[in-house]
Length: 132
Length: 132
Length: 132
Length: 132
Image (cartoon, rainbow over all chains, first blue to last red; front, side):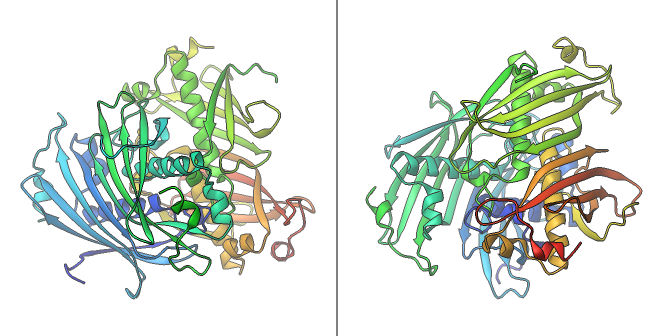
């Protein structure tokens, strides 16, 4: 896989995440991806809850999600995440949801984010830039 | 707005849909959009639950979501939906989330779907094609 | 129905709220009830989001939920809410989820709440007491 | 702790589970408890998804939830579950959500369940009775 995905998070599907089709609901994948991004940050010393409390808002401005095959009850999977800079104010998480052995791809996603300052304006966030 | 959006669904933000940032969580927009698509179908005589029970699975294969400005506690908005054919087996919902007076755009989305038959294979779904 | 339920909120089941059993997931009823309570407060001039921002935390300390019959895809229902005082620091919402014509009872609930001050201690909340 | 809790499930709070109060939303605890019950069954050879597909519906008829202290972003906890018979047709899960070292109790719950046959009538479910 290129680019190199730096963080893996292992999760198991919970039954309430499945809908009447018996598969994980489309919206829930965004929950998994968000959790993957926040764990990515935690591993690098950045706590999303603390960042939010400090007045900096990291927000998603665009999400592209390719659903490759459905996750079902009881399946285990991993969320892989990789962070890249797009411009001075915008960065992107490239993320994949895979079977633990990486043979099955369930979802591929590209999540564009910006950081907003207390005034709600896009503003560089030094702690995040230090990761790039 | 082009293309002409044919169905409007009016919703009010529920507080449990907001996260620690005090705004509607990114994943919840996909809930709104799904509800908008299913109401679109209902208005045209197609009931998603019945379709699912009949063995046909309408599934999302790709979602593109542009988050324009955040929805907050108590806000009212409408979900507008428009269906188009992409190819023999693929169709697309173009959707917007707007303020009731249409002056504010909260989200724009393009949702690609296919219908799967009982065997899990892409297969034309006549009832849906009749809408196009 | 005794006690007199003062606020009604009309809702329609959204398909993503249903789980693999094809009925609304148990946890989702608590979403409906919370939304019913917050609308109850809004109608009386109390905005939950503003209360939270002001540093007062209204929290649930006990919930009793009796599931009478399942809500299914497409059903419309109403949430009825009634507020009573239990003690100087504790109050209770009695809530019902009913069919619009009130012939079907889907759920009955008793939700005990307290208000916490900035320090996290139970403390009378005057604006709420004024409703009782 | 009495009665002896037989199954422990370790979970970490995900940030999207927190609401505008910065703590896990009340409804989400029911998600954790359901996941705890289903894992309890899985460990004993009963798969909830397969049971549902076979036409048997295990449903909650009453839930009593005592919220002791709030779960917050990043916290790890365990869900402990214990199954008991109430009557020929009704059984109960006693569940607790605790800190991993068991010093903090976040929630205590009593969840009453029945099994429904294909016709929707309460009916003994042999596979479950074998666990009691």
